[in-house]
Length: 359
Image 1 (cartoon, rainbow, N blue to C red):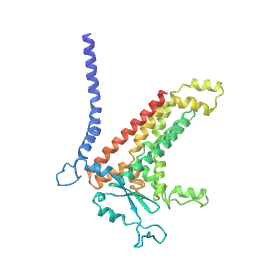
Image 2 (image 1 turned 60 degrees about the horizontal axis):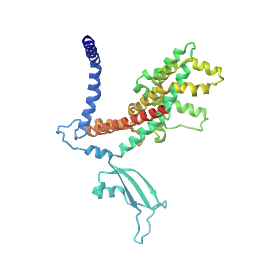
Image 3 (image 1 turned 90 degrees about the vertical axis):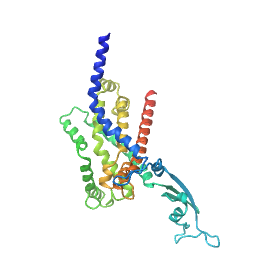
Image 4 (image 1 turned 30 degrees about the vertical axis):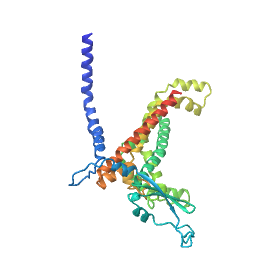
């Protein structure tokens, strides 16, 4: 018994020894930077500054998360009538003057506003670009996850066939993944170019000049969908291989029995393929969601966060604040809050899939 316990202890120590390099790498490049970001977020540390950093408490988080609102009444003349513009719309006092004159709103800026009758409702934030970046990130995730996963599953079904030369198509479909995302972004920037881009040329040719040219990366309505399409195309190869492994793990006997029972292709896919890929789908959706939240390189290369902030993401905003504006403390606060948001969303997704599997 003593010899068995000694052997188990030796095996345990040997396991710790083998895992030490990987654990050290995780600590040095993941855990330690996050802990440093947490500490820096409570200071006013600048990236390059001769001044000593000072402890500021929750000031960075207050600047990041503070949101308020106000209601503006339309201006009135001496007779009490509403002053209107040349277009007949009610005229309101200058918002900047109001914000500067009230100490409670001095640090706030307009995020968005809407008019209802003779009143104007204004949503304010101390960092409206962060809110816009966060909403842009959510939009990107909601668009790219179903598109990328659906495209990957379709390609996996396509190449999961015993055909001559199918390995060539597997390599072709996977090749964008091993290509530098910077290179891919530059190439797609040329494809999206308004005047000389191939995409606009084909679009005009197919529609006989009725559609286009579209300013894919210069129009706020098209910039984010353009990045979504490029990102899904570039990264779907990884999910394709995962789905392919899951498909090859489904017994062919199930499909043969379904064919004998007269089941068609769609019935086999719905009742055999999807249930057989349940665990694979959960993993792919979770990993793709976490990866999508980290969108940065495509935005940095293709649009620089524009136009009008329509493609700015939280990661891009954090890097811009921390390195370009050298406010490393505030950039750290953005990163910490964003990490907690991603963790919460991943846990909620996992709980949702577990609950569905339990049913």
